[in-house]
Image (tube, rainbow, N blue to C red; front, side, top):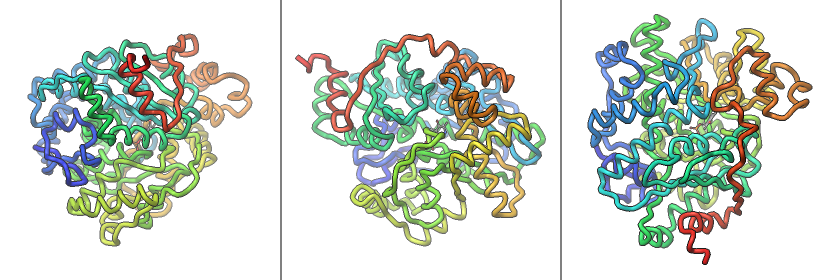
Amino acid sequence: MLYVSTRGNAQPVSSAEAIKQGLAPDGGLFVPNAQVKLTPDQLQVMRELNYPERAVMILKQFLTDFTEPELQDCVAQAYSPAKFSHPAITPIAKLNPSVYLLELWHGPTCAFKDLALQLLPHLLTLSLKKTGEAAEIAILVATSGDTGKAALEGFKDVAGTKIIVFYPDQGVSEVQKRQMLTQEGQNVSVVAVAGNFDDAQEGVKNIFGNQEFNQTLSQKQIKLSSANSINWGRLVPQIVYYISAYVDLIKAREIIPGEPINIVVPTGNFGNILAAFYAREMGLPFNRLICAANTNNVLTDFIRTGVYDRNRPFEKTISPSMDILVSSNLERLLFELSDRDSQRINTWMGQLKENGRYQIDSSLQQTIQARFWSDFATDAETLDTISETYAKYNYVLDTHTAVGKCVYDKYAAATDDKAKTLIASTASPFKFSNKVAEAIIGTEASQAQDEFAVLELLAKTGNLPIPKGLQGLAQKPVLHHLKTERMAMQDTVSQLLNPNSLE
Ligand SMILES: *Cc1c(COP(=O)(O)O)cnc(C)c1O
């Protein structure tokens, strides 16, 4: 299988090459050039497999230039008991007879990004070997909070790589910031950007797109790549857990084989929900993919009206990992559902860059609406959902997952769809303990102390263990102090990659 660019102006490449490059040279995103299907027989076989085995079965169909033993080795390292605190890797919690939570946060950094970012470094290292790459790879990351830490953990001290993470100075939670600033490793840098996530993401994309800069780097034997969900190697591991969850629900006799279920995904950059879309295309009986947004509800408007318009105020919400107005992975969806029409993609992406807005045609809009539904939750609704869910089911949701639950409730009220529903639970509540404690204990409790003391409080109240990755965070030394303006991000990169350039 080869990978082609959504913009249609790049050579088709192998999966190893696509993973190495991250973004296609024409500015597009790589997508597989053929469909992958899963038969009911294969799903049946999967029932008897554990998570790593299921992962190999799915990955090998997309990453066709990797051997099965290579993939086995990668997933064994990624999904080991040393990394994931739950033996099932992605366990399912049953909230009520028709709603289930897919807990994707049992990895080292307590958010779903670990599922992909524990695997990506292994895939990338192999990709470098397979493509005979001699250059050092510099991973540039823009993060809304969770990708950064997960990528740092995944890539720390990985031979042949350096990683530079840019996070929005004011845009991440205290816990998220401290997780990144205390990161150890010889090859890691963490830089605060004055601005929001979109500024950081645009800055990184501009660096990727600067031919001259990339040539200068390649003369120094350095190549840039990405650990954001624009990289196919980041997306493909996410397909696995949706399929695995469906198989688990059958195995637990919660559904019968072939029974349609809905999938709810708290969405920002459209990566996680796109993975659910690919699983659906593979034949999984997913009825509706429910795109849950916070008040940065560009995607809700888009799915409802066919107009994508980023011209609106950027809101800082209590679900900061979803504070995004330009959702990169939507480009892949548009490509897949528009008969792979690169010309239209180029037009829309050009308009987005120029005017911050584009409108798709009504037939494509209908195609999207047949598969997706969307609504959003305000911060107040999100807090209410956390306290309600705790009172009713004694289950503590994080702020992002609560957006998912709230939007699902809106969906259930707006439609008479009674299908069982799986909500992607994207982070541990401890990552956003201040707001979660405010919802279940009260404002006094959360305001009384700093965010790290609130971890303890939340643990006591909710009778939950503090995840290993978040223990002792307040005591760890801060190792990173760099700050940059958006316009100076490229200079920061060249200084970090080539210390002599300062002389
Ligand atoms: C990244 C993130 C999201 C958004 O996921 P996308 O793939 O960017 O849509 C939602 N919740 C949490 C906790 C996240 O870290």
